[in-house]
Length: 498
Picture 1 (tube, one colour):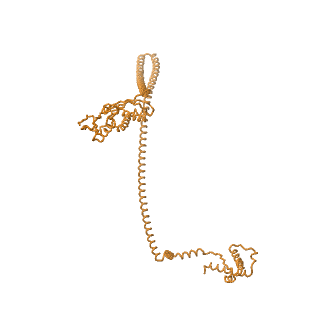
Picture 2 (spheres, one colour):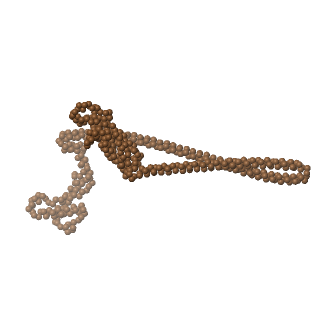
């Protein structure tokens, strides 16, 4: 017997006498008939490079590093100790406590490869790239569900960058494609920058030319004004000079005429010059006015456009508000109508329910009354001697017999039936003459005349002449008697049987 204590990262597994299955503890007394071994729960890392194929039939290599170890629960440790701590071969005892656990790694590697291939086979390469965390979570979940039966737990899993398998250049092509795309995008960005620079430069040059032209026009206007003022000053100077010359030559009569003529010429030149100056001035003034009017018209057009835009925006906003108001009013009217219909439906339902209940109660009362009447009729029938006596009593109470007689009288009132009754002979004499063989024939012949007469009276059909002449005088007399009897019976029936 000895006392055994495990390390902080291990447990004692005890089997043998006095233990039903296995016993996992940190410290215990080991009896001679018991066996003790240690299992460590330290996780271990191992790398795998998985060859897998996506749903698109693309092969790739998936390098990954998993950190796996026994789960620190009694149930998991029991599974791990019973399933994975033993080994076949000459090094069984060493394998039970070996920290490398090569056989465990082989089992885990097989599980990881199988579950990872199952997940990858249902995903595309794009999904694996974009949803790396989802892929990692799915792999850990599926592998963990399989490792639970061995008492193992995944502490960490790192999926490295996907790599091309032998003979495949998929990822290399994607990298080249991304590089080329970035390069082309850079070229496009440079071209866009150049285009924006050229456009900005052209805009600046255009604005510079416009401003220069505007300044040149203003300078030309000012120069024209200055020339006009200078021309006016020159004209005034010339006029003054002429006046001075005329003053000097006043003494000379001949010079006066020449001075007058010269004065007229100078006056003409002055007028022409003045007209020319005025023309230039007006041209410059008209040019300035035209530019001012053009700019004013442009500003007015811009202001008009702005005002119309604002008016259109205001009209659109007003129409939208009106539409919203009409929509809200329609919705409220609809809600009110629906609520009113619901209330009316509830009222109609309540009224119909009350009427149905009233009708039901009335029917119940009527049925109860009929039951009481039936019981009363039953007692009356027992008193009157049965149903037949009750029926006769009720017919007497309702005057049924009188009503039937009156209905029958009304039915035959005004009718004139033709009824023919005849007798073929005396019954007494016929019985007395029973031995007469000719009696039947005689009776038939005696019945023919009244029969033919009746047919003639009721249908208008007359017998043949040869048949009417047959017979004896006695038969004719008997026929007359029979007809008289029939006529008397007809009159009795017509007169109401009186």
